[in-house]
Length: 331
Image 1: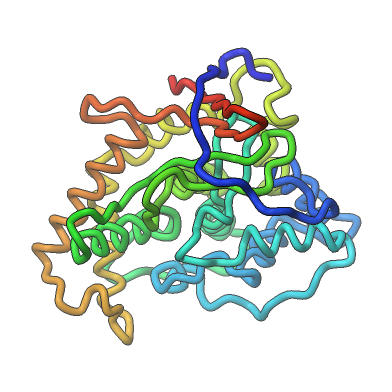
Image 2: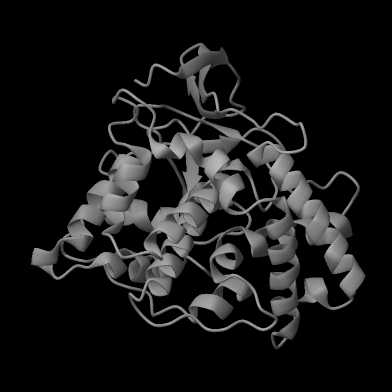
């Protein structure tokens, strides 16, 4: 276990549900096992295999993401190299359900909970930007494809929904808890849900960072993730690169650029036919205000700007008569 993980107490609101013992735990290591099989060159795999499979299973199902990556392929069948239990896990993780985005999350070795949708979307943009696969389209108005598919569209639509809803609507968070660290199967949010709960925010930041890395040249996705998150559910000494995500994301993107890209992707959405209902009566000034607020609040909550301490990414677990939370103290 990483020596820099902190122990605290927390409460998980409700018990999990029974899961077939054949289904692997929702650990990043389980995903790596699947990717190793899918990307094996001896079995005809490549760095793009995982991205293509993810698209077919439901990654990138929003209008803005499809404007960047195109329409998804047909629903795939289980590859022979993947066991039925692994396939069940993968389909559950990648099936897009806007009402429960946290269902697509896994527990990473650094203790964070990572949504795979924005992570894999960012990886596909990075691969295609680096020359692996079809070229990306030029968006109009101009928008960064990597930020569009990972965080900008999600932020813009979440804050538009919050502004158009009741006064108690939330646009970010909350965090949540796992039923079991050793065999995580159920992740429960610890408060009113938003379209961007903490796992989605973390997956989006990681998708930006890893997509930017892949734009410099392709790697096998399993190799990329293993190097970024580490392996063994926190059993290695030292801090993996993922534990510096907020620092690195802040350096790469910054609040001003994020504001610009949120406004840009909302502009892209307005050009689509039909125009999303959410944007039909929204003017340019309102778009700018939403983008400004979204970038500011996201940066304050997750990156640490504006003098507000970001949350401690953590292992939130529920067991026996008490609950423990193992949080990563960010740098």
